[in-house]
Length: 462
Image (cartoon, rainbow, N blue to C red):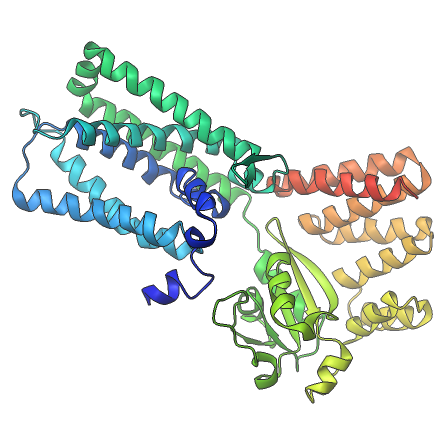
């Protein structure tokens, strides 16, 4: 199991990109938001490391083994398993047990007064510095926001390693603040003694503050919670035929509540299933952009795959693609396209009459069909029939007043119309729709800015 998880999934980062592995260590796995979901435990861990440095009780042999075991588990899991390699959420779960064990052991022993144990000055200094860095770098990253960090385009070339400028600043700022605080604590014995004498009160204050922050964080998350997986799963069944077989990282989540069949497989692994599509009658993929690129790299038959639709799952783009007709025929799969797939094919082929025929069939069955109405508005805009496209989008936002994806897509089209016509009222409408989408789901701000920049760079050249 450890071999599969650490070596055979995507290969260990530390072997082919050692500098990247070091950056991941220093930023707590910033690419995957490692520890982003555990700010409460991260703060308690930093406090525990500081206590471990100065605690006043010579613990029993059994107690010492407990703390050392959990600390070793935590460090080994973090350094050896989670950071140098692929880092899904289950690795964070793997580290929760030793984190809680270490924190509980140290906190339980920290409230008793006794002479401080003898310990190497180097070890004490390292633990204190590590605790300070964990606090400062974690706090800085939380202030700026993890999703924003992942999407930043600003980069710094550090010995051949291209990293985000903000990531670089977090590392430097965390190290500087840690070093300054470390020197102050070591140089000013009165401060250190005061901190040690009042450690119980400080623990209560800091732990309570961290707990309150975590409570606020969770409450905020629920406030902006969505039902995107469920609603997108329902929508998926109206887009493709029930004879379809879907694979990819989002296949299981989006087929659990409908009649569409799915097949479990992850792309980009070291040990590839090269005969995957010959063995199984897979017709579609549900994936994000990065996994789609990996799939096309490993399976040439996906090069001509047709995009059927795009969805938002939180702030991620999820793409539904179908194998080309020729690729399905070579594999002997007689897939029956849905009306929406036929309409999308005619849209791509510029055959408006056939497109409208199938859209009319779709909308006669479901006048509120999200993808059908969006495709109709796209077609009208493509043919510069802006006065007809706008009421269609207005109907969509009226039908789905709490769907941030609908508001975002309609805002995108309104901004496109503004750039094509120069009509200021279209821009005003677009910005109001963008604002509404971010009110429903605040984490779209970067995506909104990127969409506007993309439209302006593309259409202003026309």
